Amino acid sequence: MESSSCGLPRPKRPAPTLVVEGGPTRGAPQLASFAPQIASTAPTSCCAAVGSENIATSSAAQSAAPPLAEPLEAESPYRCGLVARWFSAKPRLIVWDFDLTILRTHAFGEGVEVAEVAQRWESDVRDVDVFRAFVETAQEQGVALGIASYGRQEVIHEYMRQIFRQLEPPPFTEANIVTPSALKFPDGTSVPQGKPRMLELLCQRCSPNEVLDRANVLFFDDDPDNIADCRRAGYAHAFHTPEGFSRPALAQLEQRAGSARDGGTDGEQALPRPSSCAIG
Image (cartoon, rainbow, N blue to C red; front, side, top):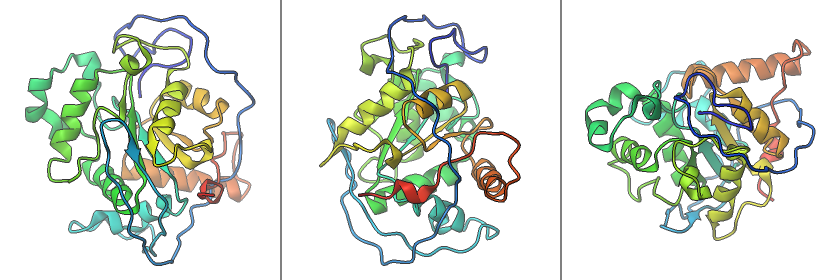
């Protein structure tokens, strides 16, 4: 994602204003093994609407899926095994960073304007098929969605409008695209502990019930500092995707998790087990 924590913004971003203020108390990082599981229970119909004030969310059963080696199918990529395994954790909320995570570029750093998005979004999005697969599956299963970014909300919203212009209800609105303005700071500002605070706000906006267990949140960000902040704040399912959110990145996370389970980890922070992300 973008810059994070109480230090200066990372070099990949144009030097934003640093707002100095206290963040949440940090504890020891939570470490555990990651073991994607595929559920085979019947799917459940549920509400996935996103309102101007709340993010609709509810639990749902998971469907069986083919193995990882099977390619994404053009007609229904969200049915592929890779995506299904991530949803086997039964998350209640999935959140992405924007620049350098959903996008392969840094829209805020490049000064992208709303009027430019329609002409460039297709080349800017890193892996539109997998991103759409996650979002469509979330809508089917009643899982809430969100974006936590230090960029400009109106630009992010326009990218989402272009990517999902065929989906109803629209999966992203002002309610679930959280930027510094939602924390009372100018967009483009690096806010200390900003990402944990954004995740907390998104958890509070979930309806009919807010997400109280932070283990029920999946979060993807290209910035390791943001991931470290979120893990210390209790978001155990915060995943570092240094090359952005894509099918290879997700497969690599699974491979590393398998290595950790087999005792082959070399001291790298292990990934949390999705089964602990089940809805209570």
